[in-house]
Amino acid sequence: MHGNIVAGNVEDICLPEGSNTLPRSIVASAFLAVTCFAMVFMAACSLDAKPEPTPEEPAAPHVDSGSGMAFIEPFDDPTEPLPMARATIRRGESEPDIVVNPSSRLVLVNKERNLPPDYAPEDLVRPNIPFPFEGELPRMMMRSEAAAAIEELVTAAGEEGLVIFGSSGYRSYETQRAIFESNVQRRGETEANRFSARPGQSEHQTGLAMDVTSPDVGYGLVQSFGDTAEGIWIEENAHEFGFIVRYPRDSEHITGYAYEPWHLRYVGCDHAKIIRDTSLTFEEYMQER
Ligand SMILES: [Zn+2]
Image (cartoon, rainbow, N blue to C red; front, side, top):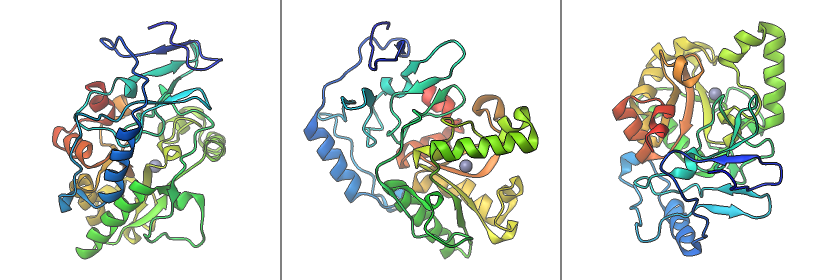
């Protein structure tokens, strides 16, 4: 897999075993078709609004010649293997790899797979959910598809008498850097690394994550949220809206993070249901793709 140079400063691009080719053709009609699907079917999974795959027109990986980075379009076919989703750009022995699909709703971001520092989603909107603070802040934003889904989730919970607030959504690379450095100052680097992401390693930079909370826990981001009625409902129902609890209990050795019942990650309904049914972490699920 050596020699697939996609940017001037890139040393290598590695694909998972068995992936011998890196498809690069742009199928404009397929992109248009799946984009239309996505725009029409933004409702919750529970409404049976699942887009049908279009096997004759798969969503093709898209090479953005402007930045030199390759992207998977965000509305990929859930039934297709995703070699690009596991591909990374290798920076060197001591540096984490960079993902090549930052705009995919299946992008896997963790301590080994970082987002490009200059990646920012282009379709950030503020979901119409309550926040425990005022203003129009970047942290209230999510990508449009995820924002529609979190609105559905909060509304459905409300219909059962549960009160869910948003706390923290989109976060830029620079904001994450400031947060991590502040946490290192307060708690030391080893401890900070358990609960706080380094810049480039936060899912919040994707615009697909939202930390949620409730009055019951004083609007905090605490593990006891998982034992509240809201936390239990999220655990049992988030997948119906395309979300996973990204950092489950007892999975720190796989995900790299302690249990975070408040951190919801949008992956789309089909994937979220499988992940929920199989009790896999997102790392394990993507390993099988
Ligand atoms: Zn979070």
